[in-house]
Image 1 (cartoon, rainbow, N blue to C red):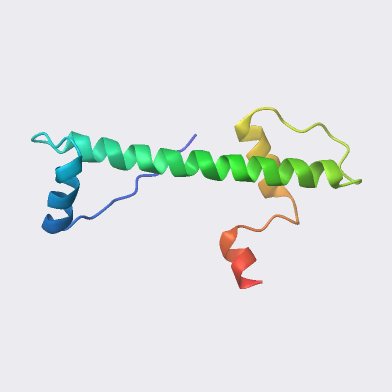
Image 2 (cartoon, rainbow, N blue to C red):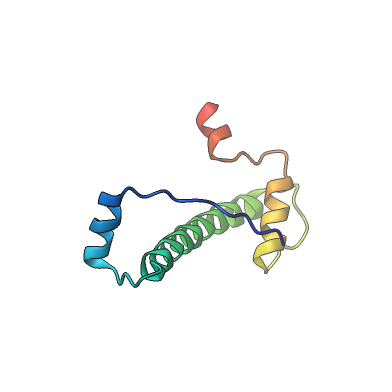
Amino acid sequence: MATHTKTVSLTDLQQKILSNDLSNDTDNAGIDSWIQDAVDGKINNAWKRMQQEWTTKLMDDNSFTDSIPSNQADFVALVTARSDYKNRKQRDDA
C-alpha cells in the first residue's frame, strides 16, 4: 500500500501554543505525535461513517448480490469502484 506524506506548517506562535499543552522535546516529537494521532483519529471516524453508510446501501441494493467484504481495504475498494460512489467534493458539487 502506498504511503502519502502530508506537511503541516506551524507558525512560531502556533508552535508555542501547542507546546503549552503538549510534550515538546528538542525535536518536537510530542507535537508530531499529537498531529499524527489527530489525523489517525479523523481517519478512524471517517472509516466508521463510511462503513456504516455503505453497509446499509449495499444491503438495500437489490442488484448487489455479492458478500460485503469484512476487511477495510477490500470494502473501500468495492465501494469506491461503484458507479454510484461519490467522494465529498463530488457530493458537494452535485
